[in-house]
Image (cartoon, rainbow, N blue to C red; front, side, top):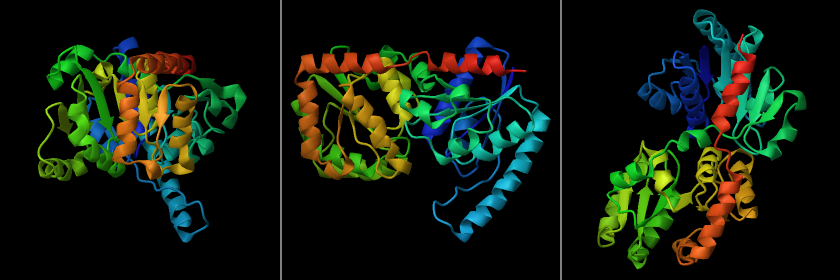
Length: 365
């Protein structure tokens, strides 16, 4: 089985593609992969760390208003489609799967025009422009949320969940605790602003750092993002030093192990993160990013809030006091935590990657 993966820009598009690759490899150990992304996207850093060969095309996103930049983008798209066709003819894949981001557009479109079986996966409740465009050309559309089904053609759309849910099920909580040096009797609270970090979450976490020792049964894990790490650690020193029950990292590559060990997560409401949390039944305090298309993170988060799995704090309302109160309301109430955990677990789709694998094998020539 030969598979082309494409998708990029942010971890929310890249990690689902890599999760699909891992599931295919578990099912078909002899499967071969090629990842087509952009040199400017995060995929250019993440994919080479795996054993998957990486090639690139360049494309920019369309502006929502009519501008001359859109003419240049259309020309780039035509060039990227031509290059993608050349790569696909050389590689001869059995199937192509796109997981979103601008670079996904020309690759999946080229595959469809060449008659190669194609699948796209939509992570968010409200689909992005690229997947809306591609939906008319691909053979199958896989979605993460039931609410997304209405955005795509009924005859080719299937609810699978997000493949990161399956990936995180292989996390080892004992390995996560060993990495942190934390005993089993300590609760782990993970504070994480996404692959690039989030300034607002960092500022709120800094504000509550002096109060973390008020939760002696809890160990806090604070992942700042690479670009924020130096300033955050300097600020902690200025505040009198790092609390004993706090670990600070710029980035972690063993996130499934840490999530498997987590009692509670504080962070953004990206679709992959929510898939991971619900697969494991982890309660959460979500701070949706207001800087995303169609405000899709708040829509993602409100779904969990409605079902009782999460507390949602808008970034405009976030401060140290609000975050501290929300933490205390969960960490200080075991019954509430247990109820949120069960609500989160009920929303989970831990077999998502397996479902996507089945969709791919049904289409494979």
